Amino acid sequence: MSPDRLTRARWLAARTRNAARHGLLIAAVSCLTTLVAILTFVLVPRQVDRALALALGALPAPRDTQALLLARDTVTVRQRMLELRADSLRRQSAISSPSVTGGDSAAAVITASPSGMPAVSDGDLAVLQQAIARARQAPLVESYRTLVTETVLQQDTRARATLDSIEQVHREREAYAALGGPDARYAALTAQLTRLGERLLTIGNGRLRVASGSPGVGDSTTDTQGVNTERRTAVIDSALDADIRRTIEMGRQADSALNAARLFNRDVASARDVVRNREKLTIPPVAALLASLVLGISVGFSTALAREVRRPKVGDAQELERLTGARVIVHQEQARTPIATGMVPGVSEQMRTRGGQDRTGSDAWPLLHLTLTNIGDVSREVEVLSDQPIVAAAVAIHLAAIAASESRETVLVDLAERGSALRALLPALALQRADATAAMHWDTTRALSLGGETAVDLVRARSAPPVHRQREITARASAQAGAAGDVSVDATLDARGELVSILARYDFAVLVADRQRRSPAPDVTDVVLVARLGATPLAWIGQAQRHVVEQGRRVRAVIMWTGALPLVG
Image 1 (cartoon, helix red, strand yellow):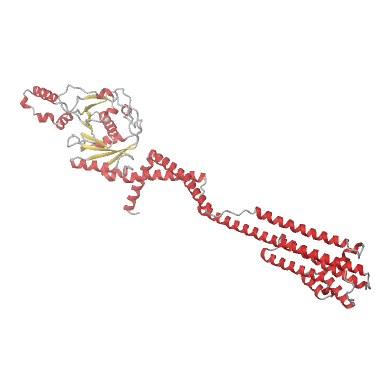
Image 2: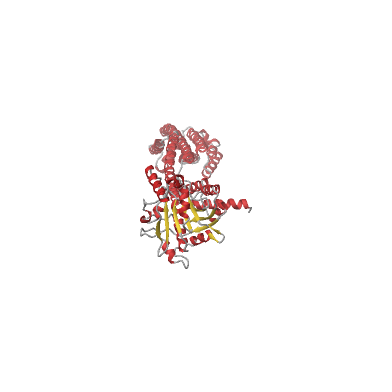
């Protein structure tokens, strides 16, 4: 991997780590995004359902098939009643015939012929017998047609009428089979065709028996009654057959209407299914919840990462070292809660463990003091700068404690006029102001106990006094000097000069500056930058370094604070 790519990869990794540290921001954005996503997953399907209802309402309504089914059943019942009526009339006609008695009455009525019918030869009887046998073996329309057209039955009006009925029912059955296929109506027509065929066979058998008996000249009255019975039976059969054919036609029309309605309803159902598949949106609740959670976490982390990329923060020690070119010391001590007992908390423990590693587990402060006091490059005044003043104050207190433990006269200077971070970390007794002082810009030096016999002096910046107070201080300084003209008013009001005179009495001075004002520190003061991991912007580090270089000073070391902010007590 090239150096440029390696640098970019490290930079992106540092930004990702810093983004992951903003758990509160990620949680807030994730919760908000999850709620919005859940509401979207709930409201969007409802809107889609409304659009689906409108689309389904535009389709035609399905037809009611109950009325058509009722009409078809009514026609079927009527047809059965007519068929039963026809059978009943035929039986009554056969019973009431006076020319025959016994079990052959029906056949005699159907087959009776007038007395003037010519005699039948033996050859014709044989042909008739063969045709009847063939029709019984193969009950087809062709067999029935041969039985009537090729035998002596072709002169029988009843046989020809029955054959016409067979031909008509056969044509209706074939036409219905071509339209709808075999069903209940087709079976009814087949049954009717079978009954007509049996009737034709009965007529043929009757004619065969009459011809075989070779009857002579009978009673004219009997012959006349037989002819009348034949005519009456033919008229009844023709009327019933016409009613039955009309009923069959009505049934066929009812079946056609029912099939058309069913086909229309099937098309409407298919159109509804197509619209539902195209418009309907169904989201399972579990999937919606999981998707909302994943989306919320992704958006939350992306927001934190975008915020970090737009304004990058300190990511690791290597990044600080590349940016400043100075030594980076990492502090990993956990923050402690101070107790206002007149002694700085956390520092006394370090004093009691001077001989070895301190109980806090951090060796950053001895290492920082060693860096500032190298042989040949000893720093007497050190200014601590940070974008978070409370962190700078904590570093300054620990550095002053380590220097005091090395038997050096140490002073801790608070350069901030307002918003001092030391006020939150030091005991209230050490921060009380004293009015009796000869310096116009600095309070009276106070001793700050660090445990045992170790102590550092504390000097705080004073707010600008009123005009009459400045005159009193100037007059007192002139009186002490012996002559008012020997003391310059400009020198008295020069805070930098006063600070230089104060620091001249000490071996080591630690100054804490306010980042929002120009420090009155001496030009020879070295600088220690303090950056908090994941919180201090890299832009501030670069700006502070340029500001130090412009003042002719140098950055001796950089402290990277990895813990939480020092607690205020």
